[in-house]
Image (cartoon, rainbow, N blue to C red; front, side):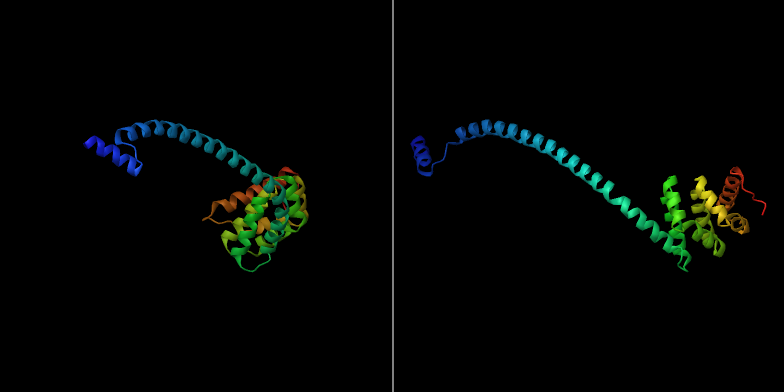
Length: 192
């Protein structure tokens, strides 16, 4: 009677018996696991493909876009040297030092008046941190022979020599001596 009731219950509610159902799900889970692993593998491969595509696009856009920003940022950095606040002057000088990575950019900084403004900044600096940033930027610019010539014509030697040495910040003395040595190496008279 119980078997007949279970069979009737199955027909009435259109369910499978428990033992058939578990057997059905076990084979279904095997297929589902295979499909899930295939989906995960496909998502992983497509994910890497999308990441590579995005990285390539970002690199291309940056390569096309950032050179135009560089000139504008150089002009802004030189403009920061005109401000009276020493903090902004230091920021402008440190930016120029970071931009001066090759001879072409160093000469661009000299052409837009950055070298002269750095010398003015050094001559009028009242605190050591501002002197240090100006000397650091001038030292970075001096890696180019043409920039050294422009610095010499702007009177850099006398301004650099007039910068007082400090005992608290040894980097100022190091930048000064490196700059004067660079002028000496290129046969400029540093005795004046």
